[in-house]
Image (cartoon, rainbow, N blue to C red; front, side, top):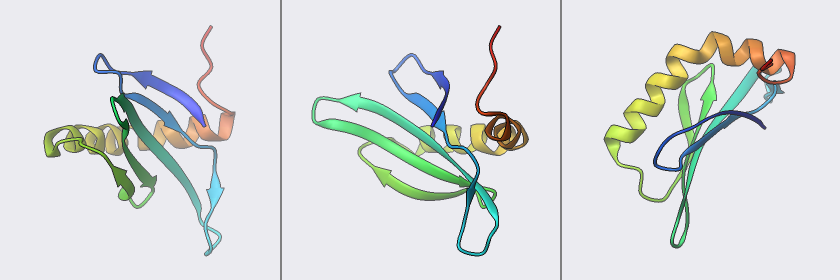
Length: 90
């Protein structure tokens, strides 16, 4: 997993490298996670389907919609960065 960003509420966003699914298609997973008193809140999306493939904890619908927007708008960049081995920061 490669780091992407961290929000002020403690949510960290990471993304995978390229993963080939059972049909041989290239996919990427984008994972949003924040620590809580009892573990973590987490949501995991898959590209290019934009589907939520895992969700645990107490993220509210508005937060999940924001995450979905990040995934949708960032999809081309996430694929490029996954191919390049993460985000290159000078």
